[in-house]
Length: 295
Ligand code: ADP
Ligand code: ZN
Image (tube, rainbow, N blue to C red):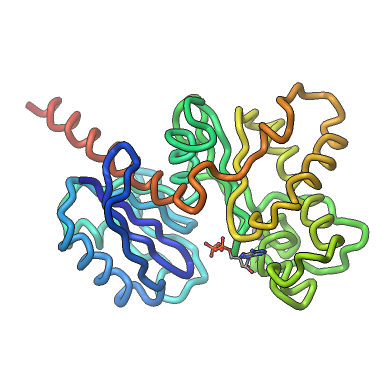
């Protein structure tokens, strides 16, 4: 059995499952302070013994193994979580191999292994929810450099009918600041799920997301693009994205038919937790290999 934690800003999902991505049991825990949330996580894994744990976490996090603060949450505004040593806290309570990556990288891995990008060595997973973030599998591996990518914070052109200043606490009108769920709510006065019939809302949203995809396509050239998160439950955004993207790309890049290329998660809301199981599997294999070389 493997363990998985999908750590989100509002809730933690903990699960046990196997390397085939089958989830056997799961629990949801509200994200409050680490002193409250983490003991409940640990209690769950004490009840369900596992051989490794994978964490897909909200970010920013430190994923650089050479770094002194590896395994920590870094600069979040979430109370109590800034500089929180996430991996260490889990390992101190349950001494097992722990895999650690962003929630969106975990989701990208889940989708590339079992979901909409199954069988491909490349995909991009983007969530449009409370924030905007993206994870990428490139040449079969999760994209990582100095740290993990932060693709939600790219700068985009403003829609000509959009006077809204933007909600990102760092950059105001970056992509996340203009197009994440809280920006939609701040601009239009109600939450996105109350705006279903307002065409102009989704026209603007699709315009912003299409610009982001244009940039990701020319930079990363993913073989599949998966759009998840609460806002993307508004399926009417997809054709608007296709329309704008087609115009923006203008034939320069040869793409598959857009309705096959840019899709919803094949694993639905399970992309992140399934990918976290894969992170656990990787951590377990790494540990075995390390031990083998030690002998
Ligand atoms: P999180 O990003 O916190 O993991 P979600 O992906 O559900 O969670 O994103 C929550 C955001 O998405 C909120 O701003 C919410 O208003 C918005 N949202 C959730 N469901 C919908 C929906 N059906 N239509 C439009 N917006 C939605
Ligand atoms: Zn930003």
